[in-house]
Image (cartoon, rainbow, N blue to C red; front, side, top):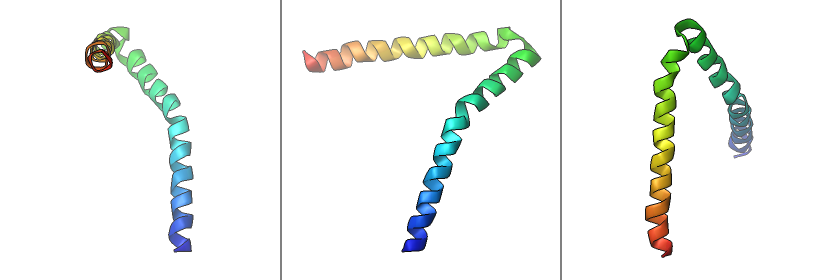
Length: 69
């Protein structure tokens, strides 16, 4: 049992380290794509992100607003 608890702590610590480094990795990947193919390739991604934010806002206003009302 001590082995599994110790292994669990190690895995949680390793996962935390990876999650802390994830934004830097994503930035590096996006920088690589924009350098290789140009900034025009990221515009559809930006419009998709804006669409998701609008959908979340609509969901927040209507669904949660209706529940609160």
